[in-house]
Image 1: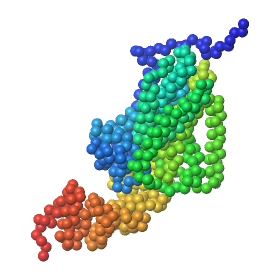
Image 2 (image 1 turned 45 degrees about the horizontal axis):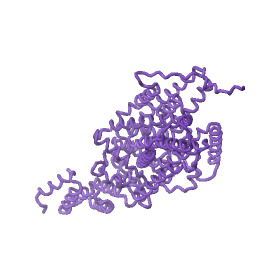
Image 3 (image 1 turned 45 degrees about the vertical axis):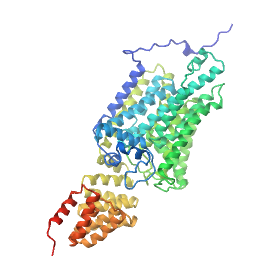
Image 4 (image 1 turned 180 degrees about the horizontal axis):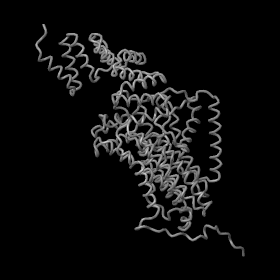
Length: 608
């Protein structure tokens, strides 16, 4: 009688898990990782508002519970004057509102909750890795890569980017609940085929189909909806789910294509409903920031992907802005990027054929990057940001976890495998802690941007703005000029006019305000700036003419009617000046200078 072959792994004794105070070692290790993550980003707890934080939080008049309906029926930037209807993210604003209600407008606590959101996303990333890799050590290594990789710094150190961790939380949670729902569905299907309990256990399925299978699908759908309401990139989750389903079903003899229907119905219904409601909120013609030709987007896609992948492998020289030029023709640069992309794709396919589980990692890596290739919804020459890879780092983490498990199992007696993995994690954590320091203030952040990307007009513009807020007008002006030289536009010209005006160079200020008006004749703030210059030059009638233009384009502009009153008063048109002061107070009751001017004129005897 021939003896059946037995897998060598089955002959090994199963190690007994040792528990510490009733807590499993896996949980202890995960808690240790979360503590390490908190320590890595602990210095951010002392940071203030930077970049887009002020208009979204402390300066947002709609950030109050009485305006909750408004927040859910308007686009993200509806509270600003120059709003562009590109983003519908009510859960992000709701998160800010909750934080404001608990902590007030203290940015330090907002930073604490941002790090907590990243820690929650890390814990769920571990659960996803544990489910897909079936190895606790590999899952922990994957979660550590996700938590501590420097590419995550932008989303963890910047309050306004907290929608990345929040969207990841909902996506990961929805994915995990979907797998529970599908496991229950498979269990019920196999039971219908007459399998016994021990057969179900061999399929790694519950021996009794849970009664709340429908409930699991409902929860998965609701979590997906929450993710969509947090960030649009979550729309790729159904694709990840379908790839996971395909890999699950292809190895089952009893697999039925109808098994896809619950997932298709759940995620498809939610996605279509969200798309319809979002279209209603944004309008039928949402704003397009940059009319980039589609052929340029297609030609630039391989370069963008390679740029992101390079920073995954070599996370050095990170910055809030980069020097990045699009590819507008099928030139040598495109061919080089395309060849490199094809080579990497070939390696990925080869790896996935050897280990089909890799398809899941590639899905988490590639699909979340695809929406970021829609360059038409981004700012001019501002197409690359580290935060765009936040969820994709889950795919990188899964690949890293798979590689760790492969090396560890291939060299089981090599004592350096775990120490080297730990050293890598320590290096990444140190790099993240250092990189996070640039987000302490606008000045440090955009000083870094100008250093790393001097040819990026947004880096120059933002650094000039940071200097302006610190009244360093003479230092700020050249950066606005450089921004305009890189990409002519009204914003850089207007900012340059403001900086030169407040540094005392009125001729340069007038020249740049005029340049801004050539770019945008309806720019009220530039007309206002010219009026201020004329008042400084003691030409009140010309100032009044400019102010008339400013008020025409922005009737409720703060300070506009007050300055008109000042010009008319200097021109001895007292009754008209009183009217303008009253109008200013009617629009802006807190304008004390207008109130003082009005009281002074009303208490003064009439001029002869």
